[in-house]
Length: 281
Image (tube, rainbow, N blue to C red; front, side):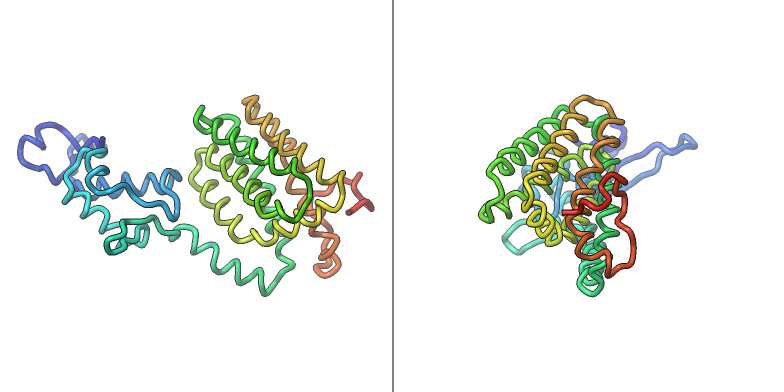
């Protein structure tokens, strides 16, 4: 239920307003619809509401928030006008991908025109995932850990099926879901949204990387081991452990990509340990 302000404001008939205390001790009156819209925005930012999710029926959501249906309707219309929600006639209200689309659309086009920047995206992905894993080790709730456990179990089950082409698509989806669960457990809205956006940009590239890594048993085993290492580090609540070890997962992706493209870019492979020199797959 939303906290909409002091009881005296309600007694005075200001049922469509909320009251917020200000730093100077005075009260700022705010329309209740703005307070409701703010709460729904927070849920979108936190990832509780994801692109494509349908809002609860109006009656149920109004009861959950403890507000009137007209106030809720007005709040939803505010978010529709911002492009965060989309109402379908007779079909409910859905969360849009407005927060992600501004990042995804131009970068997908840039990748098509300049494929060599995929190496830069892999470097960025490595930094993002390592820090997200470190934050998740500190901040993950029990519910977060359960989601990560379930995502890891699915990764393990699918990767254990070997390297047949039939399971590749499911393996890619499971891999992305595992890392997305970790990003959301970091409890930083930027990590959650950037990770989701980045994965949508490089989804095809991840597919190609897994196809390449599956050609050698050693790399395939190493990739599986490193997912387990990340999972164990988060479960251990040691923020330094995943940061030290998780980079290997993205480095494996770089190993799959760089031998085919490094000569075109004219740049050395990023982040490779010296011991790997000369043993690219």
